[in-house]
Image 1 (cartoon, rainbow, N blue to C red):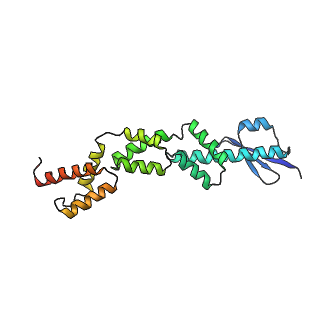
Image 2 (tube, rainbow, N blue to C red):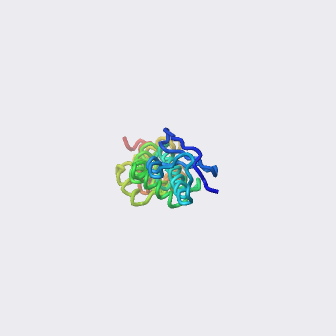
Image 3 (cartoon, helix red, strand yellow):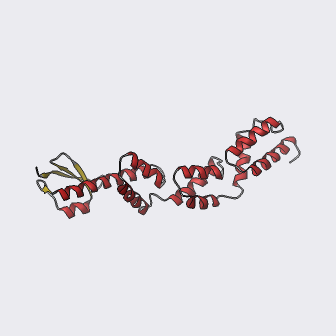
Length: 213
């Protein structure tokens, strides 16, 4: 049985044409494809045209979902790709979507890494090692992470250690060996260099003892 076009509507919000065909399938096509195919209601559809419409429909829907996901909040390319995988989008279409989003400036892992590093270091007091690990979990390449970490102030690690000592661990008595060791281990587990942790803790201990103004 020959398939035919049953209805064509224009979705102004999404800027595409919605085709309903006699098989019950619904396809979403761009304006360019609408002009190229020149199909109207009642028009028969060849198998080749059906395959073209089906492929473009998946690409357009994937682009729409990828764009919405990227606009909701900044995402890495890996995060968007994983979202599309969960939605059953095949690999070639996912590559097309990511390239399209990158071209529009909605996906930029280098920019994402730089912003993420600044935000987490300055508002969360994260160590560089933790930032590196978290960005890797988000699929960001080390080639983008290293420049992002290099962009952090050299004294920020030390400042973050001091900030955590003053806020999170202020109730601990660093003159007590047990509290000192517990605090040291906690800060090292957060990814801070052990030498900086010891230095900051010793300075704080001296201040608390009144040896440092």
